[in-house]
Length: 355
Image 1 (tube, rainbow, N blue to C red):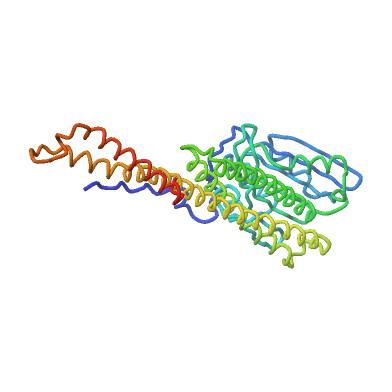
Image 2 (cartoon, rainbow, N blue to C red; image 1 turned 45 degrees about the horizontal axis):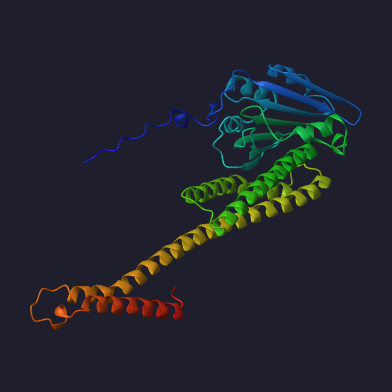
């Protein structure tokens, strides 16, 4: 009997609650900090590799967005957390990239975890966890590595487009979440095109041996996207109904609109999932029909040769008292009978529309 090896316990999972231990696959050599500080009349942007540079902006009357790239340098995360008085459990969740999207409300801040989806330059879909801390006049975002979907938002802030420069940190939180949802839509639209192309190939009989693996790959990807997006709806719903003093009443109307967008995204994902199942069922049906056509042709051929084989078998017997064996034209008669039978059976099958 084969003995299955026991998995070694994860050391990080045995640590006491509140211990800051990175759980992820993306390791950065340095932690980079992007600081954007703004108000209606001013704008400052600073890129640094020293988290202490972010401490100078805490007590200003402006809104400060601090974006941290690289979570494996937990000492830097801990320094930032201590400066902003973040709960140890919050810091533990920041560096744990295996979390399900969620929201926690604390006395002085909101803590939100969500998944950010975007395509890399090579066309591969990237899944990245983003943790966000929203305070009275600041927003902290934590990412595993460089690359995100906030470039347009940064441009709006720098060029004072829209109302974002005149709003508080709660509106910046909404803008970040809105950028994530907008990119969700772009991602699922791309998968919608892939599903339609695959469906066209299946119905056009252009499918090949790789079609089942393509369908299965799309199905796994859609399910993975759904697991990342579906809990996001709960986050927006809780934000809209939250009584947290950080969220202004005007921002709640924007959150309500964002919730409608998340509902639309979730419904589209469910629709695409059903479409993939339908494509798989249709593919199996088409394969079955092709097999039935082949079996029908083989059955007709076998049916045609049954009487011919019978005649050949009868006159292939070596009995001396078979009168037809010595008939002068017996060979030609047998051929004529077999050909006539063949033609008559073809006509019969044609009338029955079996051919």
